Length: 379
Image (cartoon, rainbow, N blue to C red; front, side):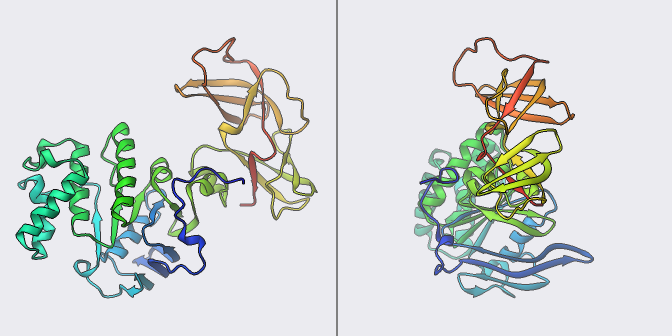
């Protein structure tokens, strides 16, 4: 059975037509004066899902999160959580917790007291608070730091304190607004997996806002790609990456090469595209296209082969000159300038320590790919 990439778990309630959404945004619009931050948006998220809102700054993703938390009210439309309408419900009465990028820890309180703060506000019994705090600190592996103040912790440790405080009250839903943005790259990558494991262990629903595509791809069950207040596409990480619905999604998620042209022939599932860069592209991912249609062929760099000799197949091969080379350890990136002037990116896996007679700068090379390695996009 073929699949668009691997999945980390079989959890997929969105594929069940009878499953009820846990979070429902129905025709939600939010305006600030003349500016429309969210535009007639409909989105359904399911219980125990790790869901990411991904997009550039100003696309409306944080506004969506703030409306769910109760810090903003929709201009129009409805928001439901677990079947209950949220209109008019103040933030402190919603079964929701929000974790901010700044962490917002109290500097004068110890780690344990920071985690206990919300529980004390709720009037929980003292012994139950101590038990819950110990449980949360054990969960985030900070038991030995219980008496320290936030300034005595590293950035990653402060992040975990904020996370422990956020889940201590056992909210139905945890909202995370760029929660890992203050961490360095290596620590951020480690914390992503910790968050995933924690979410599954607690059985909570996580909804995260990020502009970091790699972060969203790593942690999410599904991703909603946003642009200018609307959702352009919702799908699993593999669906978003391998089957983008538009050029915007293809370009925003990862690296991509685009070839513009016109479809000259259709035969069964195959289509031929006469690319403006002087070669013919044959693809079997051209649903909805007919001969004469204009389109863009999108292909990821890792699916492009780089060779000195011309490939045997007539289609999907074009010659160019090596313009730049970047060795990144696991892969080598080649930027190849075609005779048309377009620069095409190809990545080659460094599966061995040494390379015999490596391709160098200013060499003439051939770029080629298989018909099922890319897809045609209409917009």
